[in-house]
Image (cartoon, rainbow, N blue to C red; front, side, top):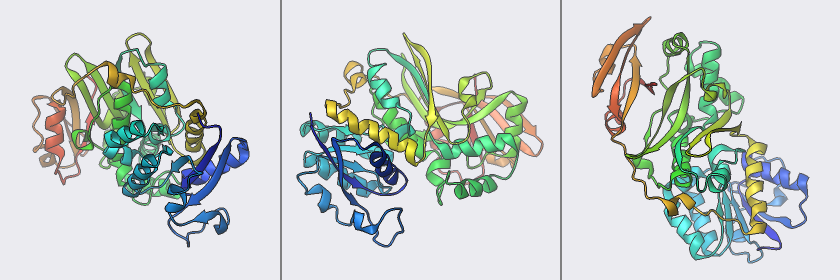
Length: 392
């Protein structure tokens, strides 16, 4: 149990600057931020340049520093930093979901080998304490499903579309101006960000470790005004969901837009907010919601991980120890797909076709298909096909 936490911070972007200002405001006597390492000396920042170092070794080789905060964007550079920090017997707190999804097993093994904690609450849903909740409150309650709205950019765009029909690209531009979307929003709107988060959630919730290659991710890039009109007419909302379901056939997991009945709680999660809906055997349904992004909300999750180190907290991965569920992508799901050109619908072959129709200029069809087949058939599509999961 560390009596004093001495921090080396990598990165001073949104979350890095957030935790700096949170620590400065809180003034926790046993926590000392010693060194901040950033990449570029020329980038303008909110504090004086004398506060920064530009060499990773200034943290990684400093024996006084016992906790590394890794809060940079570059997943490969983050992996190198985290690996070296763990090998140097330093505790690590990170928010890098892509890095974790790609190197999870190795990094967890390293943390166990060197008897240090690897914590990453901020990587999944910003300020929402979902991982701690899964590890403690649901450690011995079997989970049946987990649905997560875990990408603020996509949720912001979909909320705006339901408020007022307008071109997708105009909302993205506005989201970028307001800080809700990156200059290149691909990882967000195409479901990659949500997929990395789903992989992390699945291990804590179900004990199943997926690779990014295994998981289907469909995004919202090609959602059209007519899709929104169709949803409204049927009393649905559309949300980008990381969806995991465990039954006797195994764990089915994917990221996709979903038509959700307006009566369900997830439809009320708007703009950049995130939410996770848990369905458990004993506790039944719970909804955790909150700010999924932003400098200070995400920094609050980092702070929570930091102070937990005073109690030697580390993840117990209880679900991985309890059960050996198999990943199952053969399960059939009901799917809606649409395009302005009917020939765009032809490459996707349903196992069972249920309905074909039109919505003004839009052509759509609904049918059942396995998650695996849908992943294979959508892998190389170049058309403007919108694909979403439809309720049974």
